[in-house]
Amino acid sequence: MSARIRKAVFPVAGLGTRFLPATKTVPKEMLPIIDRPLIQYAVDEAIEAGCDTLVFVTNRYKHAVADYFDKAYELEQKLERSGKTEQLELVRNVLPEGVRAVFVTQAEALGLGHAVLCAKSVIGDEPFAVLLPDDLIWNRGPGALKQMADAAEASGASMIAVQDVPREQTASYGIVATENFEKRQGRIRAIVEKPKPEVAPSNLAVVGRYVLNPRIFSLLESTTPGAGGEIQLTDAIAALLEEEAVNAYRFQGTRFDCGTHIGLVEATIRYALDHEKLSDSARQLMANALSELGVEELN
Ligand code: G1P
Image (cartoon, rainbow, N blue to C red; front, side):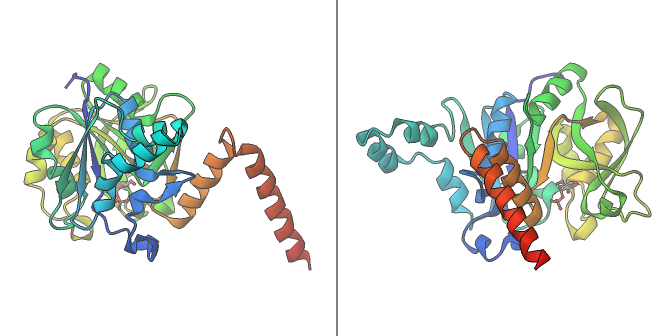
């Protein structure tokens, strides 16, 4: 594999039960950080990395994701007529020209590995990316996927994003054991899905960005249910690294786990503090809120 990735898979078929009741009608990928839904951040990262074909693996209840990426004729006409060019640009740029969205349905929620396998016919025989929109990665320089795509193109190896987590959290992640790192990359020797801290091979956790060789599809086809009774992408990656190099990649950037309440709050705070127009008032509001709470606590 030393071709450039052009296609990206977004598994978005999850039920998002952690965010009920909001997710009763709004898919969790549509929850906003400021004014853009989570899925938009992941899509922009994929486009920046060079992808022009975006494959959304969705379920039959998630029309909102498809609607979001569809052209909104009436809205565009209204904005155009009323001269709201800035907003018009925002709406149009949800998907820039030349980028196509493909929707694939995952009929049953059988796990992340199964979701990725659903994209097989669209991906074909070329390296591709997988992005989990829950993992929002903020970086001033190139996005995490761009960093990984460049590294994958140069080395020819599949690439899995990783970061250190506290040992007590290993059961929430795929965990890798690697050889020594050279710069940001280390060859993966073992990968396990959600091991308990006492059996985890390290505290180096998989973050939701992958650049994968298409060989993964045939391995997924023979992957049986693993952790949580689900067909795990991690298990197919474990089979892949028996055959060829799969590297862990320590990306540059800050990752927010927007699959949790606090992660979503943290991301919102960080993006507000870094926002061109909101930064000053966000700082002020936060200082006020903290001091008000402090005063109450003293009383
Ligand atoms: C998935 C993967 C896991 C990875 C995590 C990153 O788990 O299965 O290996 O560490 O994403 O966010 P999930 O969070 O979907 O349970």
